[in-house]
Length: 224
Image (cartoon, rainbow, N blue to C red; front, side):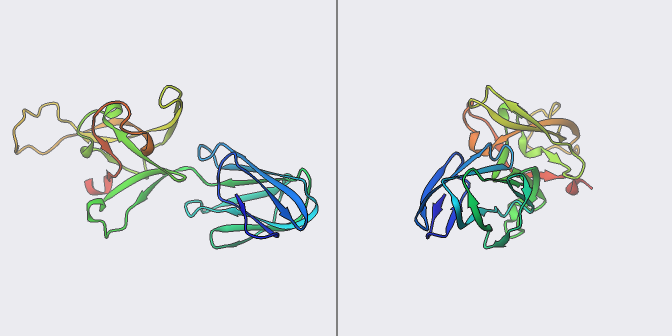
């Protein structure tokens, strides 16, 4: 968070941060607490304000289409511009602001100007990109296909992975290579089998030994 002048304080989602600024001759502190992006709830506490008029600007990331804002538990009116929502009011000591962002898991498609990713999807949660690793899902990850409209996403918090990591499981299909004998070419059409896959945040991969990794997964659309 930072103040650009004596009337506006900007919050840029620096979790656990606070700022103390001179607002029209008064020392005002804004503190931020959150468990972001595991959930999208952000809580701001105003300290030192005594009928102080200033604007609190809360960052609204592009991935969050919706945002719910309350002041002291009551729905608050705000304006929105340039990726921020602006709360302009007279503040008192102890005022609290809650902002709830949409950080649900979601599948996204790539711009077709990236030809390698055509017909593929990636899995995101808020700003986090997720990936599949061989250690969780076995080899031949490039054969994985998923139907974003049909599969169910199940969150799984793994306390033993990187001192605590939010993972997600979902169903899909993959090519069954059980009977492949190592030939370079075969005439038989690949057979697909159902499977359950586990994805972890991309920032956590490559910490459990060497193996394959996959971000962009083929969709069932290419199978229809």
